[in-house]
Length: 186
Image 1: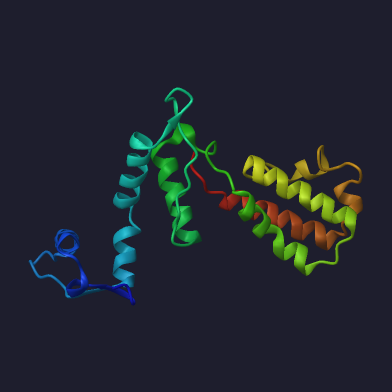
Image 2: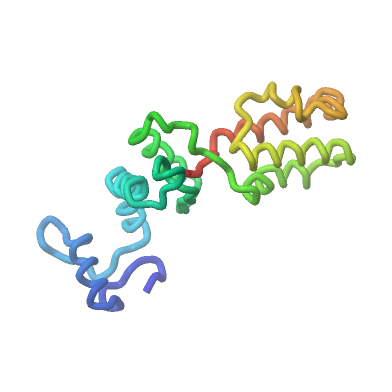
């Protein structure tokens, strides 16, 4: 059914009804096959994303006596789609902007894995990067890269003494990228 799109003939009767509702053209014609790019356009638009977010906020599992939505992960098709979802969330709920973004621990580790793999790090540098990963997993991102020069990161050795300028710049780039791409709601 999915091999590059959706074929009308392969759908159940219930799915055919939905297909007809969603994909009937303005002139009344109904395509036999919808290729992946058209499906992506259908799903990757403001109305659809807004509807999903609003439904989640209204009908999702609430915590804290019903005052806020519980931890919820929205799976996006790719990074661009995730950024689009976050943009729409921030548009719909501007008072919650920024407070709901958080990276999962596996994603935090993945974000720094290239730095760890591509560098020749000593044990103290590895401990420092691990602190950064743990902080990001707990807090979502590091607000300002100058935080790398403060507690809890600067003990037992400081950022400036641990890494040469090239490694410092690379680590700062990753920290900034993580902040820009942190997407989680709840």
